Amino acid sequence: MKAIFEAINSVFDFIGPLSDLLWEFPTNLEWYANLPLIGNLSLAIIVLVGSGLFFSFKLGFVQVTNFKKGVKILTTKRETQTGISPLASFFLSTAMRVGPGNIIGVTGAIAVGGPGALFWMWISAFFGMATAYMEATLAQIFKEKKDDEFVGGLSFYGRKLLGNKVWIGIFLSVLYILYALCCLPAQGFNVVSSVGRMAEVVTGSSIDTTSIFYYIVGGILILMTAIVAFGGIKKVTKWTDKMVPAMAVVYVITVIVLILINFKTVPYFFKAVFVGAFKPEAFFGGVFGTVLAQGVKRGLMSNEAGQGTITMSAAASDADHPCEQGMVASLGVFLDTIVICTLTGFVVVMAQCWNGPNAEAWALMDKLPKFTESVATLTPGTALNAVMSFLVSLCFGLFAYTTMLGMISFSEISANRISTSKTCINIVRVLGLFVAAFGIVCNIAGLELGNLWAFSDLGNILIVYFNVPIVFIGAKYVFRATKHYKKNDGTPFTSKVIGRDDCTYWDEKAEK
Image: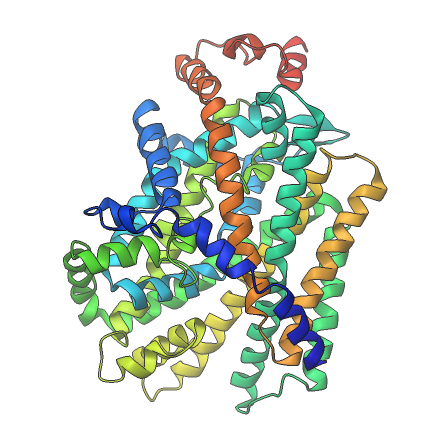
């Protein structure tokens, strides 16, 4: 078994360097790296943050001006006969956004750049809210109706904006499916790891990964995922409607309890963040080391604004106007980074493991143990330590599981751009389950296939470089749709509003 895994790992030796090359370009060129300040900013950083800045100004900082409107849309109860509600879409997108990276990524950011990293996370998220608005609105504008559901997202608006060529839609669909397949092993691995950790906390003893316990957990996990995934997007949203609020509430309460217990160090947290933010090492650590310890690979990707990987859930919503879902998507970025990631930051910074007497030993730990060690530091020698460790592991597992569900369901939606046949959709579902199961087997074998995990980094950057230019191409249509929405003159949204003639669903809706 070990020989097989090592062989697989060696086959993909080239993936890590290739991913790093694309993420670091052109900082890996000596002449560029020697430029003051900008020489530390990769093209990926410039593209993502620059896009957020541009869209924020062009939209009049819609993430601020329409924040209350977005909350109102979420809290307004409504029944939908087709598609899913904006709130259900919000929960589905949050299932993808709020993943294990919200815990281990922030921990890695602080380990690399100090507490000041959090400040730059907030800045990147603020502008990322505008990018998320753009993507989600495009997904709504060009969504299509399939039976009693809506399908859409990157592969759909990409095809329409690039000449409505079939091969473009298929290419973008395959790109997303490959991206999801590259990320799924880590999610399966993380879910099983978290369940094992919870069992160890309850029993007070370590459990070998090769024990029957892990096989049973792995089998149940795949069975549960299959039952949900094969139920279609509406069944997935029924689960995420329940799981996302639950995991968010549990995590928020857990961290708030830790903050209250250590309330005397709260002033230290804010001082450390704001003072550290303007030190060069903290600045670059914050931008390059935010999530999953690979710098901006995870930092700006914690909320996935700019990737187009959350647009499938935006398209699935039965919104009254495309811009409404744009506001909802913007709130998703706020929840992911400004709320969840900040709470993680409180734990790590207040614990001060990153600069304490055992800082060197802490720095050598993996990212999740870094976080659990921080939790232990905030509850020394108390029974509360076991409770907190259990709850943190529970949240980590739920974050990974909902991400896994989201990736499989979004792959299904993308597959509709290739073929709407049940055979095609089921093949994509089975592939997702198989790859997730592969991650579980890796856990049982006690192996982390680092080179294979690097596929997710490669998928991230490739999607960014394809999605962002497409969003710019479609930007004028979002600006026109936004102008129409703000005008609020009672006229329905149609193709003519944005100067096109191919927004079929919206035209048909207006005629009814």
